[in-house]
Image 1 (cartoon, rainbow, N blue to C red):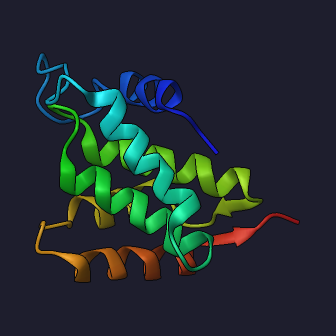
Image 2 (cartoon, one colour):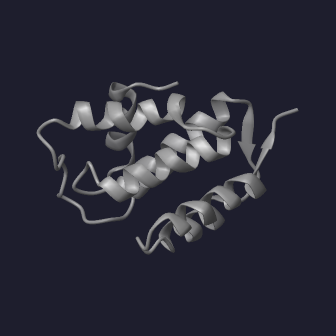
Length: 126
C-alpha cells in the first residue's frame, strides 16, 4: 500500500498534464490527515482489489483534496495500486482518459461504473 508522501509525489508528477495550470496547492490545511483517511480505505473497504481501488478513486475525486489534478492523481494512484497487486492496464491511455474525464460527479453510481471499467480493462500479469 502507498502512503501520504507517495500520493503527494504522484500529485506533483501529474501537474502540467491538462487541467488549470498555476493552481497548485491543497484545499485543506490538514491534507495529511485527509489523505490518510482516504488511504486507510484501501485496508478497510470490503470487496476485491477493484472495489477498493474504486473507493479510493471515488473519494479523492469526490473530496477534492487538491486544488487541481484530483482525477489525474486518483487515476495514477489506482494504476499504481493495481500494478502492485499484479495487474496491468490492457486498455489504452486514451480509453482510460475518456472514462475518467466523463466523470460527472453525480454520485456513487459513477464509482460503480468506474469499478466495472477497471475490472474489464486490467488483467493479471503473466
